[in-house]
Image (cartoon, rainbow, N blue to C red; front, top):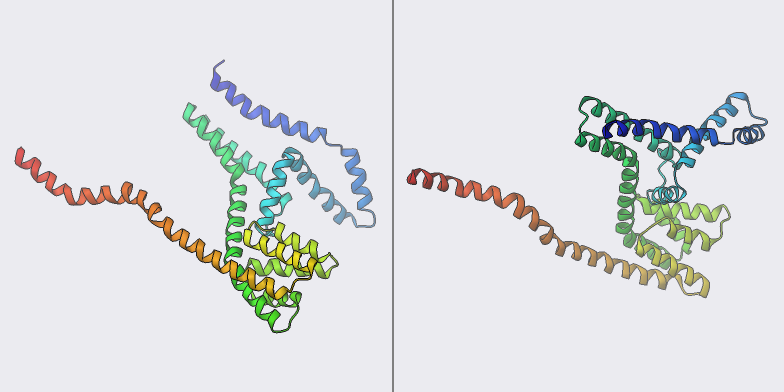
Amino acid sequence: MAPIAWIYISSVILPITYMAWALLANDRKAAAAIRTNLGAGLDSSTSELGARKPALSDVARKLTPAGYVTKLDRWLALAGRPASMPLDRLLVAKPALGLIGAILGLLFISKNPSAMIVLFAIFLCLFFYFVPDLLVYNSGTKRQQAIELELPNTLDQMLISVEAGLGFEAAMARAGQNGKGPLAEEIIRTLQDIQVGRPRVEAYKALADRSSVPDLRSFVRAVVQADRYGIGIATVLRTQAKQSRVKRRQRAEEKAMQLPVKVLFPLLLLIFPVLFIVILGPAAINVMDAFR
């Protein structure tokens, strides 16, 4: 049998076999007993809905490696955990999109069974599977950049509020209410954690864990140390705000210095050839006519 035929068979049989094994290996009796205990006292419609929803997400979680699930959860935390894409929905959507990509790839292969089309079908399946990862990662990167940009102004607002006589948490509440970005949302969430009874230090450390901005992590460490050793919070805010402004100016200068290098390659590869053709093209045609 030709190798291309084995590729067709493996691309269809292996995924179906793996999904069937995952469904059959699930302990349905234990899951049914747990759902019965949890659904006691609820009406039938609510219990059926609760029994249906976790089943698909549990299967998707079992099909996904644990380390990969942890990485996705971290990316969702950096993206602010959007309500439209929770972790369970993301784990279910990825295999579904991968299956759609595999079906499209098989359609292309059925029309033109060549080696390039097979490679394109594999790429299409992988691309559809990892599209949610790219979207979540891009959203998290943009959100962290917005936090990094807003941090100096937020620290200045908190410093002004503390020097005016407000406490640190009241200053955080004022900065969170007046702000309109992801940093304000994180500050409000931290205050909500403190209000529901979470220890203050743990709430501050959770704020640092939900972000990848070094300046915000440094600020949280300074606040925790000031709370532990009794250092004046106004001094800490003044120092952190000054350092954050200096780092923001340094990042802007660094990007400005990198700009000529980044523009050089498009200039050499795209703009200069067209410019030479426009300028030297008529002269070259005249020289060819003269020699002819």
